Structure formats: structure tokens, C-alpha cells
Amino acid sequence: MTAGTTRLGIGLAAVARPAYITSGRATDLGPHRGVSDLRARTEAVLDAAYAAGIRYIDVARSYGRAEEFLAGWLAHHPEVDDVEIGSKWGYRYVGEWRLDAPVHEVKDHSLAAFTEQLAETAALLGPRLAVYHVHSATLDSGALDDAALHRALAGLRDRGVRVGLSTSGPAQADAVRRALDIRVGGAPLFTSVQSTWNVLEPSVGPALAEAAHAGARVIVKEAVANGRLTPGAPDAPPRAVALAAELGVSLDQLAIAAALAQPWTWCVLSGAVDPAQVASNAASTGVSLPARVLTELEALAQAPATYWSARSARAWS
Image (cartoon, rainbow, N blue to C red; front, side, top):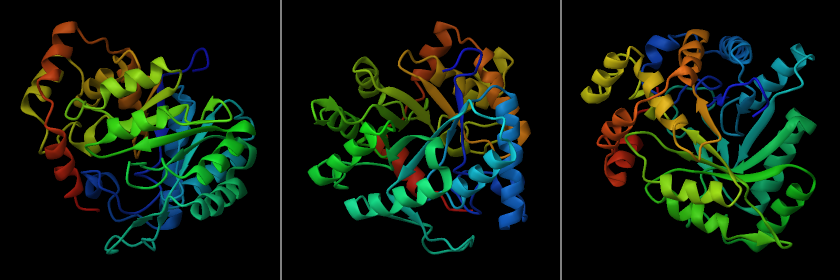
């Protein structure tokens, strides 16, 4: 991170499209989810994030109009030249701006999809794109075995864009380790890893430590477990709520501080959807968790299959 900035990043997954799996959206967003509404909300979130010292911004082709909204914000702020932008390819947004869409995004990790989506991203973000992740790479998605795709990704790498992958699911560690083994032209292909890690699902941690040791940057996503580790969440673990109260911090701050405390973490993404949430998340960087608290939080871990089954069952709203 640039000197003087926070180790938080801001992700636009939950604010640049009308439906997502984060809990509490009826309260957080209400009915105002038209394109113009969410464009204004996204810009307010970005303003607050920048003011809080956040300098990494995470978007994706499938996050509704996230890249478009970000490009507009950058155009309105020509003085902002110190942010790093990471995007992702591999899913297409097909929700047609509907809350009740039967399908919101479709996965495609083919070379053709990469070529098409890179052109779309470049048209919006141009030279501001610094990191391009394969979106939710898994051992069976094809992205980690396609030599032609790897050569194309290496071409992007060699033009100065960091190539990475994001991971989801109970086998995240397998995908991370497979990616670390891939080399093109004698050099590692994947040097950025964005994975789900939180106190309820920390199983990818050892693989992320290996990634950091190998020289990759590790970005933590879903540190608040899609809203389960936020104040007032109906399914928040009672012990986590109690620990936050004992420390005098909010539950989101406890969860993000735990992710920041991992020695392999480069950046933790905030998924805030309004300036107040940005401020609360950003305050986590000032929270130092005692060793006993970190040990107690380890006891909250669920079996990966249990965690991911519950996550898959979450409704888009």
C-alpha cells in the first residue's frame, strides 16, 4: 500500500447492481435501486472510501455497472491519480437490473470470454486497470488448465497488468495452490489472490500464507461473511457479538480486524454500501485484537461444506 493509506480496499459488488446476497439490503438500500440511484450511491461510497484513505478499488464485469460507475467517478475526479484498480473477468451479469431475475450472473472461463471481457473492461478503464483476476477460479472451471488462456493472460501480465484469481467455495485452497504452480515464460502467472476468508470460514488461510510466501499479494473478500458479521445481523454468532461488545467495537470492525491480523493479508475489502458503513469498516484498521480474542475467534470456524452450503442458499435481494 502507498504510505499513509489504509490496508482496506473498497469492493463494489453490493452497490453497483440492484440484487446481491448480502443481508440487510432492504434496510441498507431500500427501494431506490434504479441505475441513477445506484450510480449516485456508488459515487458517494467511493468519495467516502477515498477520504478514509482507501486506495484499492475492486470491481468486476459481473458487478452490474461497477466498471461504468467507477469510470464515471474517475472522470469526475481527474485529480485522483493514486488509486489502484482491480477488476475481474469470467462472469457475465445477466440480471437485467431486476431483483427477481432467475439468474443474475453466468460463469464462463474460456479464452473467448477473456478476450471479449478484457476488451469491455479496457473500453471503460483503459490504462487505469492494474489487476485483472479470473473470477472465482476452481479446479473444474477450466481456467487453471487452459494453456492457450494462460498464454493470453501472460500477454496481459507482460504489458504491465498484474494477473490474479479470485476464489470461492470449500475447495478454495486447492485452486490457490494450483494457481501458484502455473508459470508462463519462466515467471509465475498469478501474483494476486483474492479469496473469501472470515472467522466463520478460515480454511483457505494456510494456502494464502503459501501464496504470500511465494510473492503473491493476498486480498481478503467477504470478511464480514456477506453481512453475517455486521451489527444487528440475525444470524451473527453470539460469541462474536459478545467479544465485540467486550472490546467496545462494532461487529464488522471485529471481523475486519481479524482479517487484517493475518500475517499474509495485503488488503481486506470493504463491501460497504453507504458512507456510514465505509467509516465503520475503515475504523477497523485502528483495532488491535488481543491474542486471546484471536484464539477465541478460531473457535467460531465452521466446516467449509457447511459454510458454503449456507452461503449458496442465500437469496439475492
